[in-house]
Amino acid sequence: MRIDRTRYLTQGIAKILIWSATLFTIGVMILILFQILSDGLPVLRLHFFTESPRSMGREGGIFSTIIGTVALTFVAILFATPLGVGTAIFLREYTRETKVSRLIRFGTDCLAGVPSIIFGLFGFVFFVIYLNMGWSILSGGLTLAVMILPTIICTSEEAIKAIPYSYREVSYSLGGTKWQTVTRAVLPHSLPGIFTGVILGVGRSIGETAAVILTAGSSLVMPTSFFSPIRTMAVHFYILAREGISMEMAYGTGAALILLVLFVNIIANWLLNRYIRKKG
Amino acid sequence: MDTKEKIIGKSFLIIALSSISALALIAIFIFAEGLPLIWKIGPKAFLFGERWIPSKGEFGILPMIIGSFWVTLGALLLGIPLGMACAIFLSELAPPVVGTVLRPAIQLLAAIPSVIYGFWGLVVLVPLVRNYLGGPGLSILSGSIILGFMILPTIISISEDSLRALPSSFKAGGLALGATHWQTIWRVLIPAARSGIVASIILGMGRAMGETMAMIMILGNAVKMPSSFLDSARTLTTNIGIEMGYASGDHRQALFATGVILFFIIMILNSSAIILSRRRMG
Image: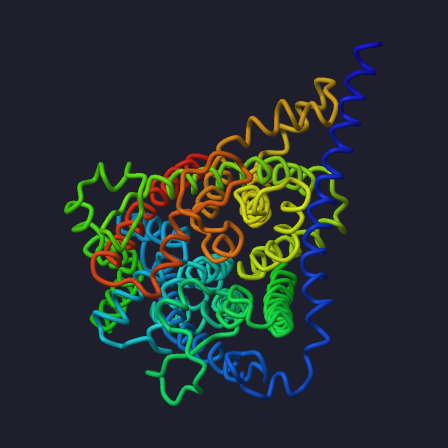
């Protein structure tokens, strides 16, 4: 009987510890977000979004950095989506488990773990110097495209994998070719899943700093073409905070950044849930 | 028709290959830029040199290697227990409703930009450490705490997946033998999911090693051998991040050489994690 009691006691203690560790984790996370939002939200007036930074960011708003973020993310998505989805289609529809497919999966998994500063170094020496694009939207966007590629490949592959085999059989039985089956039976149904991956990529691009600062620069001048250097919101936030230019502006930019990333991820999650419910 | 299909198939192969050729390009360009300097000053002097004085052409990265390992170790000391607790909570203890709220919330943690974590560390954690524990505050301890939280999503989601992937007969068997729920978790489920859990920890380690911006803001960036957790430090990543903006010539090559070492460490960690999690599948 005594042994019995100890093991239930152990179980009780273990469960209490696990509950408190989980609550602690969530508590800290809420604390981090709350702290920045509570100091940052009051800064977020309309003119904060519509004016460009003045005197290094001490005054004005963040308009030009919003443009920078949007432009960079656009370039990244533009290049990463076709490559990523194409790779996923190849892995799911055009090959079996072969050495090549295993190599591609291994490469994708490895790429997913490469730190962003390494992408920054690569983007700097390859796009900025070797291809002579300079610090520009294009260099930064292409670097980000390589960085978010694994995310898009993985989510697209999952989405394509989830399509029941019967969809393909129906297409083939109607005399459809492989290409027709892929474009008319498989892709339309996996679009929401693919879109989720793209949105997750957008989220990563918005928040990235290390890779962007080395490839797109940190110029506050309004960009005029895809070859102009720019500063994104994340880079602006980093520079404001690290160089102590203006804590007020840093809090404001940080809050805007958090809200944007939360918004993007909630959309992705909502899409994914709707998609799963429809499938189930 | 047949040739058209063949062409399409080949095009997809080319797309897929060009996707992963990115990894090869990264390796080639960083190695081409960094390796010559390592040969020039000698691998031993580079890896085990304790002095980093770019203006005098002295490039020893031992303090940064040690710094990276200390910070990563600290992050794991915090991240493993918290991450495991959350993973067990989500897979075994959480009521379904709590799970559906908590899981996306934890995914969200992974999406918060690292500069935000760094900023919070700088304005909240660093003063706390300075006032209550002494030292500059900008320290390995502050960096480890922030990193510990940053690697949680990685540890939690992969550990939880591997706990969930176990056949339900494992749990039923444990309970049927008269074990308590906790004994079943501790003696049956966790050992069975071991390889996935280890993989999650290794991937978390990779993330900790690779984090840059948050660490630049929190670690204090002094180039010296750290002697306590309250010392300021510099990691491999922050060394690159801080100096890349103005470096040129040998100095820049030395930063790429730092990247080469970082790339090596990360690739070893990544491939062992991938191999471990493959074994679980097979």
